Length: 317
Image (cartoon, rainbow, N blue to C red; front, side, top):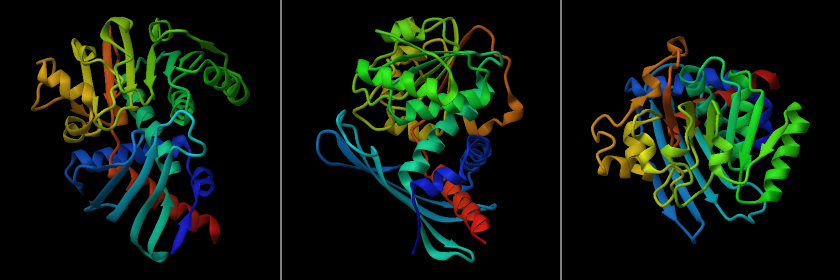
């Protein structure tokens, strides 16, 4: 069985390609071209779980079966990758009956690329100030992704560890010569920001409606299973919500579930799925708040993984 490791995935994917793949994956989902049950979560110890995500894409260039299984560990002192597992792709023509693609790398890139796709549609075209909440792999990936779609000039970061914030700031300076303001509170970090990315494993809300500027776009990706919550449910009052999948968000996002229970969101059409929009639907954002809440979909993993396999085949000949 062919196995494409993390280094191979990162060599073959970039955010320009990731934007195209994200748009395609979300279009397939929202147009009913994917058989995709809700994610199965198997809980281990207090800070670990396994997610199992099968899917079948019915049509188009990425048609076929796939299965993602990944173990996620949220311990602050975890060594090595927080996401470990594989995306299994079946019957890739001319390659192998089954190909395993590193799930950690696919998750890291496709999650940030999804936020970049939403940002290019929903954020103000002149958005220059980004706040990153969190300091891990997704924090770094999201800063790179935001820079791919907006002219970022100012960065603020908040995290629970001052040392981790300093390491993030040093990485940003080395990577893109972009200085970072380290903030003591979430409210300080998001003040006057055009774009806010929440990338934490918070179990209690860290960001509320009162913290937000009058105009901003929020990418909320860190809480994708029950028991985790980055956004206070009041954040949806007076905001426009966009999702990767309404059913998936209603099943896994604590902040959305609580907002529905409190009548702040409708339980029928909780938000607008990003897959119903395209990059051509870029909106001139006026005063107000847009939120992209994503929990991750198997169709993303399948589209990105099949593309990686094909890129690998093309470069290996």
